[in-house]
Length: 221
Image (cartoon, rainbow, N blue to C red; front, side, top):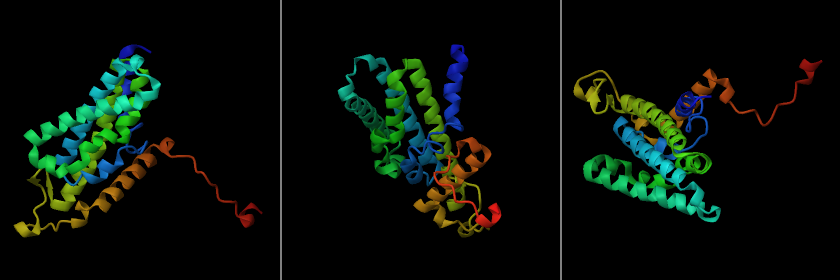
């Protein structure tokens, strides 16, 4: 396989078929917590993707010089340093969104998606492959957050990115906002529904059942 198609496959596989959230169930804490609006979802997605790509490149560059005994410590230090920079930039230029994201930007340091990709892929591959893989996983994560954030903001507030799409009753319109959509349980149900929909379309993503019920003896007869 030539380099360009291989890199394209590495980039596109995490979007749906190997999505880190819907298939690998990574990073769902932030997926549930910061998707009350599209703006916060996009900001969190961009922050995590930037951290993931840069950390993947750095760790890949120095992978042969990191002793196995301290590799996790080194990876966490690199990721934490990038998170601090991103957090400070958000507070400087997007303060209101930064306040909405609360501690979840800081928690990128221990996000299982970031640690999982740096440990399983970046540590064993050259920088370009590592960064393309990180970008693909970041985009896959971003896609899920954007979909959930759009649904929650649209049905919870009748708007998208602050633009009123559904005229609400208090504005003289016809739509009554579903306040439940802005609460954490709604994100959980939406994510579950999204996982179900994808695995219905792509049945190969469904896990093999751990338990098979015994056959009905009457049917067997």
